[in-house]
Image 1: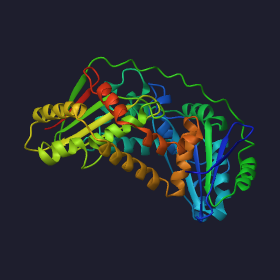
Image 2 (image 1 turned 45 degrees about the horizontal axis):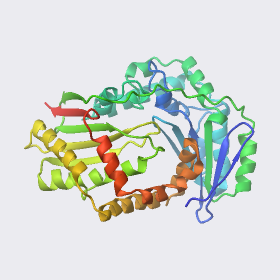
Image 3 (image 1 turned 30 degrees about the vertical axis):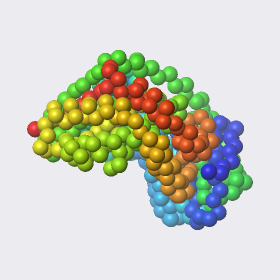
Amino acid sequence: MISYQTFTLANGLQVIVHEDPSTTLAVMDVIYDVGSRDEDPERTGFAHLFEHLMFGGSANIPNYDAPLQQVGGENNAFTTPDLTNYYISVPYQNIETAFWLESDRMMQLAFNPQSLEVQRKVVIEEFKQRYLNQPYGDVWLKFRPLIYEKHPYRWPTIGAEIKHIEEAQMEDVKAFFNRYYVPSNAILVVAGKVTFDQVKALSEKWFAPIPSGEKPQRKLPIEPVQLVDRRMEIEAQVPSNRIYKAYPVVGRYADGYHAVDMLSDLMGRNESSFLYEKLVQNERIFDSISASQTGSTDPGLLIISGQVADSISLEEAEKALDEAISQFVAFEFTEEDLQRVKNQGEASLVFGEVEVLNRAMNLAMAANAGHVNYVNEEAEKIAQVTMEEVNFWSKKIFVEGKSNTLLYKKC
């Protein structure tokens, strides 16, 4: 259970405080409710590019990292299809430095043309290294457009193609900032060796003067119900053949999510899972195999991926995998099997909350999803999953017309 208190500034910034006097750290986590799903299809990769630009200097602070390093702090950020997250960790005595830094760049970026060019090159190089020049790197670049017909999950966070990043202009940067980087579209969490009154006073001092802005209204295209199986093949110079299968499932905060999570754990979380025992340990058809769900805010995917053993043809492996999935659906798991994966899920929650920064991020993400107390409901929701629910979703997911298959062949 993560304790917290909340308040909202007059400009709409929601602030969450988690007090932990046992640590010597204070952390700040800021989430902006914008991810790659909010991009123009002709200007993809912009949310991620903008994450980089946020470190290029602000109105009163030309070098973001220097002041933070002087007070012993660390920082980083990440972008997902659903949100953009920035975080800082400092010795608790220096938490006001974090307020100063984050509020200044929320108030006004420097909009430095040199910074735009530098970060553009950084992102383009990242695109090439991670997606184009790495074995299997282009899987999701090519697989997502097969799976999604309309929803902006069609492209990865890095973007659909390099030219969208190459063509980003300064006016695009300013428009993006003014639309999304406003207090009314943000969540601020301060956690660690801090007090509620201290955080409230510092929030009023540093963030309250920033104009509210208007929270963008999200109107994303709804993905049509999939009725036909889809498949594609890629051939490239890679070490081994691989198979990827993706099936539509519910979003992160929808009913059934936790049952699907337990289902995917039973199917392929680790070496004791159904697919691993059958296809890796017993039949030696795959060298490795796993199953998991994306956990996206909007309806996501249950993904099965496996590396085929060198002695097995891709066709044999796919046939064996399809048969194993059918056997999984028909298999009668025991309550003990279910309890095992519940224990794994609950253990992951506990270990994930050891670090104060992780607690801050979990609070921010829950608040951004609509209710901060979601963070404290996870364990109960896992515990409440029944075998009947797992069986229901298993029979609902793995049916004809719902599969997306990518065969990745080595040359």
